[in-house]
Image (cartoon, rainbow, N blue to C red):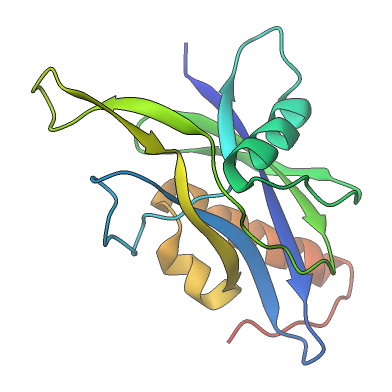
Length: 163
């Protein structure tokens, strides 16, 4: 059975019509200095007894250090990452100026196979990213979420720019 994860993709359209999305960058030495295909929606794993939407809300708070905006959320889609993990992504539009505070921490083995454990922040940065940049910054398995968001906005007749 595939590992399942749920996350939030908050988006905004600024005064000039530019579409932006809120993304997080993983913490720790492995991800340090990596940008392309390193970013993600704030997300976390869940089990069969958990509500994915509730997990996505909780994980946003844990990874960004702030409460998620209180806006309507809807399932954008489920996306398979190269690891096989399936990520359910919920989208919501917000005009809030989100600011990353701090992430929860986790323990990892570093260097790999060394037996040494270190504590790292799960996320070391979170910020608004222009949608066009998100297409390369996001993990490859999450990139289709940007296309799905654009399609949803197009279907709703919403004007936006992606440059």
